[in-house]
Image 1 (cartoon, one colour):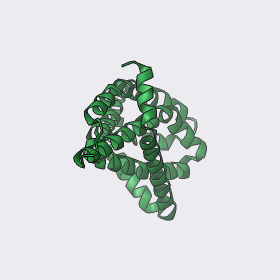
Image 2: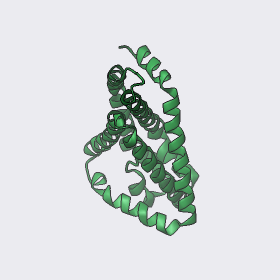
Image 3: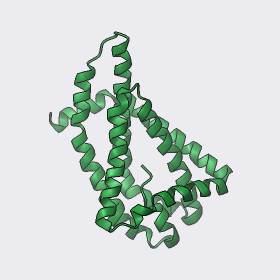
Image 4: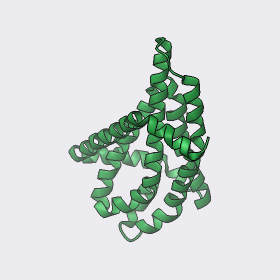
Amino acid sequence: MNWEEDAAYIRSIRPYILLSVYLFFATAVLGFVASVQNPELAATYVGDVAEKLQWILDLSPPKMMMAIFLNNLFASLMALLLGVGFGIIPLVVVVTNGLVVGLVVHQAMLAGGLAFVVVAILPHGIIELPTVLVCIGVGFRLGHLMIRTLLGRGGDLEGELKAAIRLLRWVVILLFAAAVIETFITPVLIQPFVEPVLDSQSSPVI
C-alpha cells in the first residue's frame, strides 16, 4: 500500500476525522472558558499536570525527545487501535486532551501573551495535532464499523483495521518529527518570551 492509497483511505474517512477535529476544538474552547472563569483553579490543575510531567523535563534532551515521542505515540495508538471498542477510547482521548489544551493555552496566555502561546505550540503542534486527530478519526471509524458488524449491517472491519494499521508508519514518522521540534527547537523559540513559563510549556500536552 503506497502513500497515495493511504491518502485515499484518509479521504474516505473524512467525516470521522472532522468529528475528531470538532470535538477537540469544542472541548478546547470549554477548557479555555473554564480557565477564564476560574483562573486560580485552572492554574492549580495545570500546575499539577506540569508536576506529574516534571520527570520528563529532568531527562537529557535525547531521552526527553523519546519520552515525548513515546507518550504521544501511545495515546495515538490507543485512540486508533482501541477504537474498535465502540469508539469509546478515542472519545476519551480527544475530550481529555481538548480540555487540557484549552486550560493550558489560557494559562500560558496569562503568563506570556498570545505570541508566546503561538511560538510554544505551533512549530510542533502543526505536525502533532493533525496526526493525533487523524488517529482519533480512524478510531471513530473502526468503532462505527464494529457497531455495524455486531448489528449485522455489514462493513469490512478486518480490511479497514489492516488499512488503519498500515497508517501507523506515517504516525511514527510524524510524531517523531514533532518530538524533535518540541525538544530541540521550541525551547529556543520560547526563550525570548517568558523564561519562567518554559518549564511548564515545553512538556507535552497530547
